[in-house]
Length: 511
Image 1 (cartoon, rainbow, N blue to C red):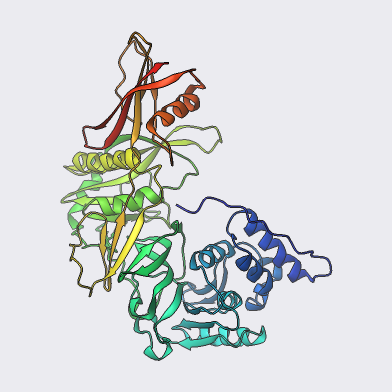
Image 2: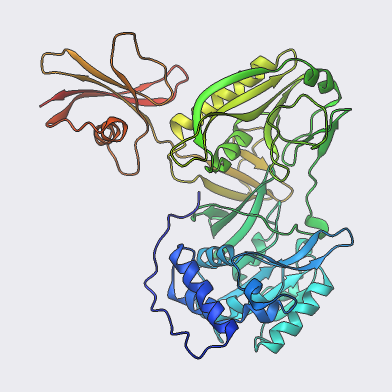
């Protein structure tokens, strides 16, 4: 879901004569540029200029310039309440903000370092306001911005949910950059028409940094989505995870978006033998499943996130990782959740896994099959598509009001978030000779439609810009290295599968 890596043509400044911190700063910028996180000369220059270590004096320079977060404030129970974000993510979000000299920018979530980067990008004719609810954070930011020569940045202590009207310039900010995990975006009125908003938005506990432009009274995403994590927003805008615990099991279900459902009746379900629904969809061991789980969150009513106490005896096999709760749905006294089964070691040694769904309870098999069908739908139609498009309307606007359970619509306190998933059709082909005799069948992805005694290969989806015929030629080469001279399309049929999903079937023959 992130932007394909682009290489920036940057002449690396010589590091001879620099102190240790300066050399480390240039090394970090080189690393970010090589990985595609820095994509413009302006962002490159800012990251090579602002002394990151000066905003993190508690750690040695090597740690300050590592490509990782630096925690700067903690709560009484040890939780991180403020940090300097990972440099790769800061670079990506600054690129998405498309800052220009003279822009007026609001940063929500302070710390100082990122505000200094923004100040470099907007220059002396621009204006930067950085805001945080915690006085300890803003005091720290004020001190370090002054020490590093960025005292023109305005530092404000306030609750972002109740943004002080006095700090908003006439016409609104050109850019609002949010650097805390936020469940909602209540800043429409503070953003200028045509302005940019970049924020890590939570949708059913999945957090995505999205870049949007405000036009026609709505925010429209126009940047690849970036999976990320930030310190949580505090104050009136803090979210409620709506977490419920199944009694006596150590299993927790959260409805952060949507209406929480009863869970007490699920305890007997977890004691029953589970049902496994196979999707026949495979993923690599290091392959992220964020796009799929975001799709399921919008496609399935009653969707929730499932977490498990590590020492609980609850019958949940293949428990989700501690910090990444699993995708689940509740159906009365039954429950289904997404899981995996390892099926091979894979070429890279990290394994190949099939996505399966575990069903619990008297109707767990139906719930599991329902989720497995949506996994297959995503595979056939959306897996190879570009990232989804997100449109965000204020709830107070005059547009059509959609219910919270409409597919791929998330209704929040201030906004309505709609996700549109582009469709990339699957391909299937029957290869014949010029007399119509069967040679080979390239079947559509995850469709068991071969017959005994016939040659059949697993096909796939069209890729960006491809015709169906081009996709078939590529799939044959990728699957078995088969390049057939003079292979031409005889007829192409746009049809629907049994689930009414688009599949393009072609009959191919030798020319």
